[in-house]
Image (tube, rainbow, N blue to C red; front, side):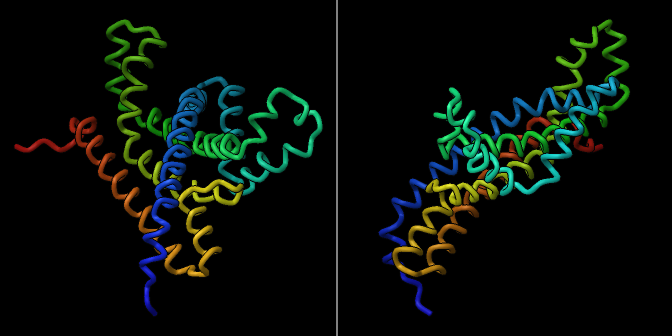
Length: 232
């Protein structure tokens, strides 16, 4: 088998355009997902049963259903309701980019909320007692001590979620978006070269994964340095 380099070389502009689409989907999804995940994570550690159970139900349903089903429900499912089509939301809900970002953000918010909640629950008692000894209110304690500390400790787990979301963005091609996978589908449809098309897409995802892993390693080295064992 001979790898057709010429076809891939000619298709590189399409792949780089798909790369920009993938990065946009990933950045928007992670940003809005994190915004939703922060209050959800706090709700998950609340001692109020109704508050805790509401957040638990949300994360349970989202994590318990496939991402593809969620994307189809938002992109195709909502369109069947006349009230949705006639509402002010329709210009956004009729956009494949908006629907993909919404579905991805909802999905990652549930997983990220559980990561944050787990980190909050694992907060050393010494940090809590020190904050109380300083006379901090509960709000100030979460703002200055607990939440920043939990977010730092959550970095290793959150890096895995970011990598998973990168792979998940490949589903965007199913709803007509030309991301990296969409570029590969287009090349395959035009030239009937599935191996060349998808191995190139895989190389793009691999490079992105490597870059993200390195960035998170640098972040962990900076913000988790205080957790490293001390050398005597």
